[in-house]
Length: 338
Image 1 (cartoon, rainbow, N blue to C red):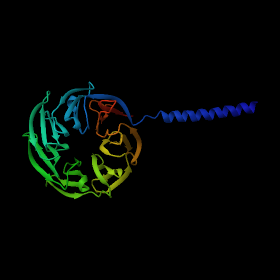
Image 2: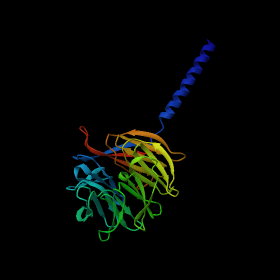
Image 3: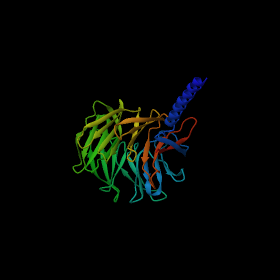
Image 4: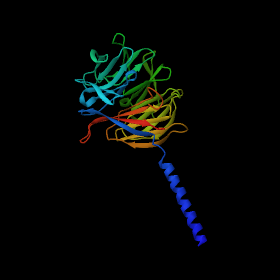
């Protein structure tokens, strides 16, 4: 009896240890937690780019399929204003120094400006076919806009006019400055290129080796480590480039139909949002590895990571989710952990 009792006790101890281990693993927090959903109201069609007004805590949402832009009050968690009668809005950017919102419209090639707290119309800059993504250049106080079959327009926000142009081999889908601001990296999927543009010369000077991949739409730049992250759709993979050497450091499988890539510098993570209905989370501390795949909604591909605006711990990832048969259009708000 004593031996049986001892054996039973050991068995229970072993099971308890396994249970504690399982609970410990289960208790590990996911890298992103869905914190809330901000309803956009009666909005139909695809949601495209986001932009941020950090000083006023406002998120701008390009409601491309609805020909509108929502102005979301992040503190209140609601739509505070809506700009309507647009023409397929794609790129949006907020120029804080002048309090001006820039909205690029693909259907008529215009860039429409809205001013002040009431977002009164403040003019139009005609560009041409397929006005698309917008990038702020704070070093030179310029606004860069991709458009047409292959060009970047340079806008002076002081006079609200185009003051320069950079020609490319195809339509630019995304583009970012390097750590010095001297070069632009440009995704040109129709030309199967990642172009490198010399900003001072205003021209494309070279390309990065894509290694046989295609459909390079989103990108992100890690200024601290001089790394460029490109998400390809064919095949579905995330490639990491050393921008000093131009060499590819890593290739990792990722979710399909990637549309946005964000870098969480504090946690050394990469977030990739994909139209297949997932967000992939990669860790970059020691090696590039996917640590989570979080389900979302099919077609929800547009996202924006915002580092803490007020204090540490206020970082958020925003995801645009179009309306479905049962749910209205929303912005999902994810809180990174830990």
